Image 1 (cartoon, one colour):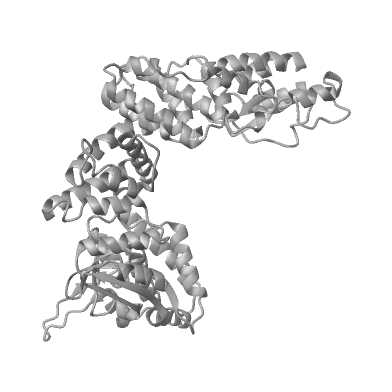
Image 2 (cartoon, one colour; image 1 turned 180 degrees about the horizontal axis):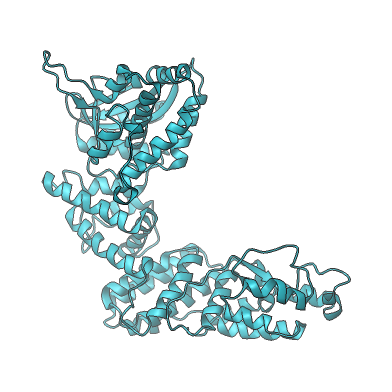
Length: 559
């Protein structure tokens, strides 16, 4: 963020007041700055890699030059008081590291403690005050602000909240590294952090200006999620004016994200974008919501309206794609849960989920499984034909429009015409093994060959050739297959089985009977179609061709 062009862009944004400076940690954690993490921020979430990188970099850094820790974007709420708009992960991690240094150096080093907690000065009328106020204040205060807090016994894991677990994980990683240093090295590291670690801070005196700074920094390559910015926009004072309501909806947002997990939560936003816009994207997720959803009629508006809508979709998304229990009280429960497990695990794109979501929102369970089968085959038709993303979007948006306009879900499913012939042809591809869709179609064939009395989760460690890719010159394979037949058939779908255990390269080239009994059978016990392969008494060109033909039929049969 020390690019002159970038500062010019920020200064040119016509903000009422903008402060910016490059300062070291000693000043940042000094008497002129007290920080609060606002409700729209997600909780502390740095993982092991982030934490290890920080401590490793600081230990290895040259002590005679500055170490740049990044940019902070702040909203100044009053004199010396700042809400952290961007940078709370770094500030929190740095606070925990300073607390670990304090406790490892020993002797209660006052200088480090005062960076974390302003001490009370009774005669001067200065109260004790924590330097960084976080939402999970009790565990933070106990671990970070209390002498020897990073070494104190922890509560039982079963009663820890997710944020407290992150705090303790950070103290564990930092403490393990610091334990390798002498007292002199610890003191040198503390001095280096306080004097030579620097940040650039940008502070605006209105939320709107700070939010604009946030988006500018984010657009210049900072690793922040677009949904965090959307969260800030939906919890801003202009969207929700009442502070108590803002707190309530901030907690609701965090509970929704924690309920289905970060990755699924973000995936949901992409599905919502497609549901509401029903066209290919013109920009990133933030642009799409700002310009093509929130500003349009018959679409959610920022604030409580959107968050309430989001809650409805999160609950639906969870039942469709996380627990996959949406059809639990129907005859299709086992089939739905089994098939969607493989789709979710193996599909490379997620546009289809938007169609399932909107269908479920409008028609509930009526015709859902039949709709899923049509959608699955449409996806497969796109996959085997390498259809471009733009063309896929056109297909999905037509389905979304059909859902909105059709009274009955049956009509929507009937209008989907998947290219089943292309799927069958792909199954007969001589180089089927080398395609990206091979594993999914093999799993689908296993599902289609199974009596599904209850849900199953079909997974495979690998794909194995029965006829080896490189049979030994003196093997029985060479007498059963000509070289031209090996070249023609070795990668056919009929020559492939799924393994539930790891491959063993030393056994792959054995002759059929030995390979079947000692290698394949123990590794394919979960797969009925693959078990049919090891039930064969011989493995010939005719067997492979017949299995390829039957496999092509299974690829499009209704499960």
